[in-house]
Image (cartoon, rainbow, N blue to C red; front, side, top):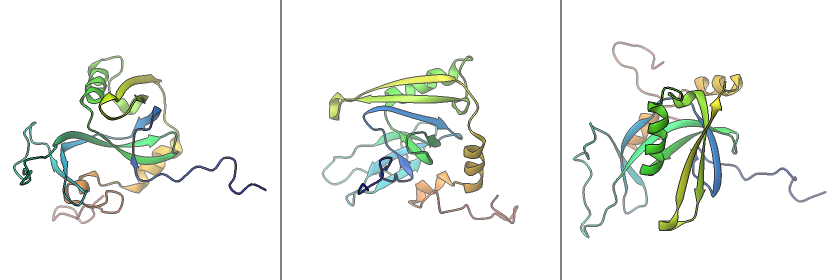
Length: 177
């Protein structure tokens, strides 16, 4: 009897991170975009994009050092983790490669095909390659699970957990969904 089962995997969190090598996933829904920086408590501060302008609520710290990154964030099915996660992409080269696919009429909406992003290297020597797979249907159970979870991506702009914070009902609607 082994200490751990042969097929044991360390549980993954709710956010997908690119690992060395191939990272295969399926985009499940539209992206939100914004700007992000990290505060002194090592927590991300995010603001929504406003026609490509850096929002006024992002400020430079006293030492003048701040790294503001534009991000895309969207839900994905991570094949390796075998779960629905949120993927945040800040790498401009990866964003540009995905935009090329979206604009190409043979590819289009990335919810219709898998993407594999290969990561090699580390630090300033990190490179990424983006490869689409042929169009295919996503497993019906994944789609059903995603629809049932009612993810609230904009919660990241207030520092809340998108998996546990449903939007508040408005006067027009009595229920958030």
